[in-house]
Length: 328
Image (tube, rainbow, N blue to C red; front, side):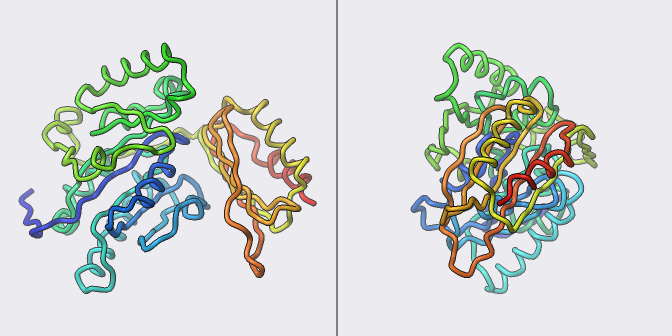
């Protein structure tokens, strides 16, 4: 398709990686860097309710949430619409941004997202796809690559592979993983990025996306790319305006990990704990969970807990019932 791009198209980075790999941590690292650029962020979560916007550093960035489906299938039309609205507002001077970063859900196939910048003429005229950056969880990647086609696609389409949690991985395990990643995608450099630490020059403005190479991987890339998710993988959200009893909620989380950890692909939340003047943020993948204090609650703020669970065959009603019992 012949395309007439504007003189300086806005570069776009697609940030992908499986559930819990550390995409939001890396995105926060980018947003907090003193690069002097304004960034439009489009983020997508798998499920009805998103909380990542609350976990992002809030500055001058334009942050748009898409949490009513997966960006690579059910809400791809929304992506086209949002990109179009951003470009129109940019052209008319309503907003200004120097680049766009799209953070996909951990279950996204990056191919249909990248496809948008070549088959949608209005999008292709204003934007330029700079690179697909894939974040890989060094602890859980082997299992994820074995069990999920999306994880394989994320690695195969990457222009850069960033290894997170490598500081928690045994050297032998890490070497085997890097060998597997190189076999799957020999063209993408691999580097470690624990806690999102990496040189921005290695991931931004790298002109890493090569259409010809992608066509060799997936010849029908410019055709219609359909994508569906495994029905076993579901997500649900628990919300409550009542505070949690600290001992009971910790006991619930411990039991949840012990019993369902292998099937817990991703879980995260913002919790209101009795006696705490700040929110408590927890995040986890399988058996690995961490938590920290979030922002202090404002005096007139509704102290609401929002907890997101993504996994295989999880007993939603049992979770809800147990969480109700954790409330004060």
